[in-house]
Image (tube, rainbow, N blue to C red; front, side):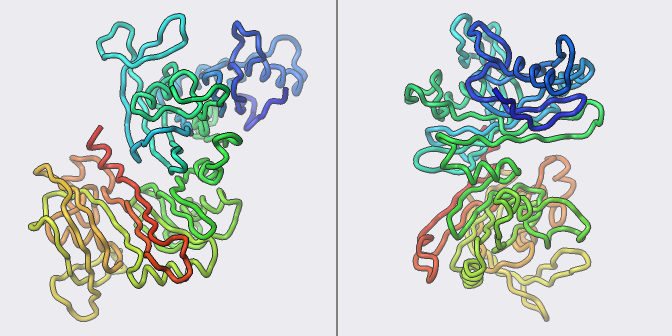
Length: 452
């Protein structure tokens, strides 16, 4: 059998584990990955005698994906420390049934059953119980299946499988925890990304692997994007909608200088789409997360830009702010002058010379007495419009140091709590009939945080 090597040097061997292959020899007597990797090293480097290869983490037998071996005992010790201190980041792609939330954090206590290779969730005080923790994001949904992006914080036996099943979203093809799985279906769980600190260079290195075939086929574009750190919410022949993470720019215009090599959503998406042309339609502030559109040809870009300019595509946001507006719903009509030197706008209640009007509809979704969750719909689309408008009425967004309260933000220790959560397309667009009535939704991550 051929070993698929992702990276190797004198200290590391990173490879892709095939599905249904044990990581190390077991009672089945089947070929295992460790033996295959040792044979590869022995042959390639003409090593005499026994080859040293340290195993520092594992994957379940039916699961494929990225795995790293240490080529020296020193590297093994340092990589083991990586995993023990949780500085190593392990990300998995999974296809699940059920109806998962867009974001969530799962913290359970689980125990491994002796003799039956099963894990179950138990009460915290159960003897032998261990904590299991992970974060998940639903990337997209198709035909009753959902593609999940999972970051593992602990490495328990069958952890992802049993925790997702426990919330009603078992993994497709999981013969142990999904009662609807058919005999012969391959489990759709794949370790697609591993980030470690190199044992001698002391730099972070990320390795990826994209699953293919079977149930993965219908999510091929989304999986390619995921390997580049992009969650693709929607794609067709004309349009791509990405769920942008906070802290990353949308386009080249968001980079401070031309010499800045910091990645943008546009750059990463180009890599994921093998440099197919894409065209930005609108932008989000760097600290804002949520839905952002890209056209797949120039004519569609122009049409979408026209529809946005005419306010025929509705963009809806959620924000968590300090305090609460005087009314539970209404329209904010304010006026702004942009200060380019300070990269901010000054807001006024009445129009003044050279000011631009800012119109925002809002409604309060919930309030706990200290902060409120507000839904906002832009009527105009000015720079920093939502952030500046809410601050002007005495309800600054949590985490907004530019317009908000830095002292309160330091106490909360959080990023900007503003998200683009919904795009509503017109019923009768002239050239985009396939998008007629389309609604793309994405819950705000901080709302989910309040529930878990």
